[in-house]
Length: 86
Image (tube, rainbow, N blue to C red; front, top):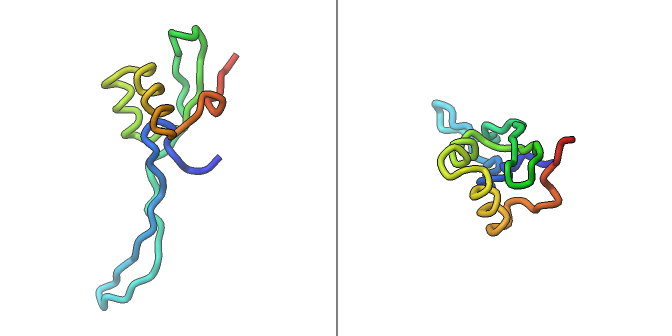
C-alpha cells in the first residue's frame, strides 16, 4: 500500500534541498503516516486505517463514521480497501 492517508488523501510531496550557495537537489517531504485501529460502532467491528496526524484530528473532530463517509465520497479510500479486523 502506498503512503497515502485514507482520510485526508495527503501524500508525500517532492521539493528541493536548498544549500547556502542556492544549489538545489531533489528531496521528498514525507507525511506523518501511521497505522491505527478504530472501533467502528455502526458495523460493530474493529478496522485498521493508515492515517496521518491531520486525519486523526479530523476523526476526533467530526467522528469516525462522518470522516469515512467524507473520504469515500471524495475518493480517498474505498469501502473494500478498509481492513476489517476480526
